[in-house]
Length: 165
Image (tube, rainbow, N blue to C red):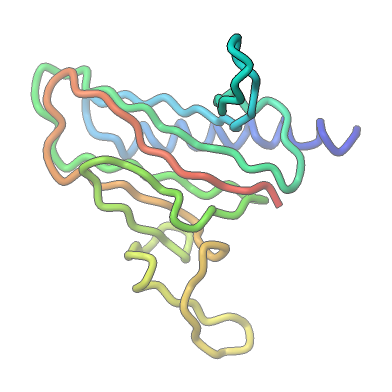
């Protein structure tokens, strides 16, 4: 097995776990679809370089991937208290400042999803026993909590970037 193909199967397993986790946290009537993409630069028909997103089917250490979670309220009623939680997959590091999500409060966990806080509120105590501020490489989970109910038919996406270690 070569280095390139070695990450395809683990990535697929990570996505399966993430999809199950989302369904449990998204609220009644809200469906979710996870996409894992990479950005590539291509030359368009006019000879201009443009950046496009493509499905990340083969990644190697050092590659950046974009996790996008599309949501849709399929219910005929507003969905209240909606949040989406996603683990930062093993062997990846969250790209600092990359989480996006309109009308959401974005928080992070450094303890496997037990507690969440804003980036500047988090700290960890490593093996040396000296507490320090948490960094992006310490994040284990990301949570987007919607500030307002999602109206019937509302759709959108939240996302973040990570680098494969």
